[in-house]
Length: 339
Image 1 (tube, rainbow, N blue to C red):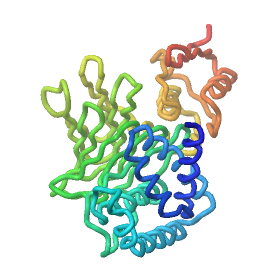
Image 2 (cartoon, rainbow, N blue to C red):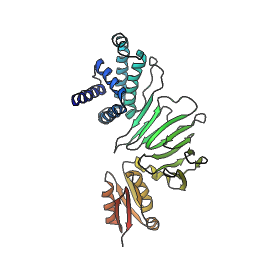
Image 3 (cartoon, one colour):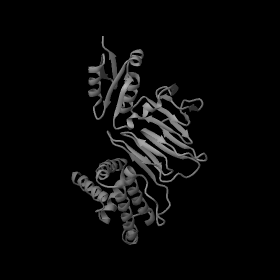
Image 4 (tube, rainbow, N blue to C red):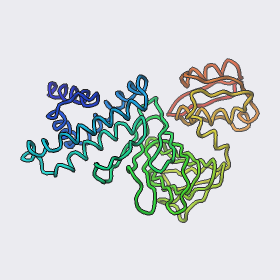
């Protein structure tokens, strides 16, 4: 079993760098079809490969690589039909469409969607953008909408938006800047909630491990519906909708919505900002609930910069420049006024 695992890992690496043989590609596709776990393992290896390639290669180089691989697909179609028809049940075009879709999925992770050529079959392809723990990325969807995907998140979307709506499925957190299209609303399915927009910018936090689903609206308007909601909720800019999973209840409050997108920044700079706002930004960045007495947080102001420091390093530094102490327990961080 260990040798078989090592063999498939080597085939994945050769497939990603373009050196896999025809037989290896066939074996890989069969292995991907076997279990969801196999597909998950492939995506993990793919993430690492893309991260390395993104550092050393340009977008143009990736587009050229995709073009060359598509040429090889077209050249080998007839030979696949002759040699493998006895082994496969799918027609030749469908089999190669599956392989082409896998390549598209790989490149979609780092560089967006490649352009379809006339020779490719017009089939619906579901793409998945996946970010690993500690990483995030900016991507462009087929309609021109832009999405920032936070760490440990997944966005599922089609290679083209057909029908009367543009629907994506989010697991984790993402910030969207949606291209306006009054005839085709943009819909984000986030757990038990459905967030519908026409053209706007907003953040959705829908991690499975968290107790609530949150939507913060920066511009435009959104309509939120879902399980337990008697009627849709409409948000205005600088409003936050918090949906508690346990009792399927939601609430709206006025916030500084831009603070909920601070996870997108490489560094956070605070210049005499109030502690209440700082904690919201830190909660967004470190994905942990933070608590502090409201009055104390509102009147306390701090100046400092967060780069790559851990949460505990930042809290320890804050305790050196402000009259606070802190505790991290039960999945929460508590900032406590020092007596």
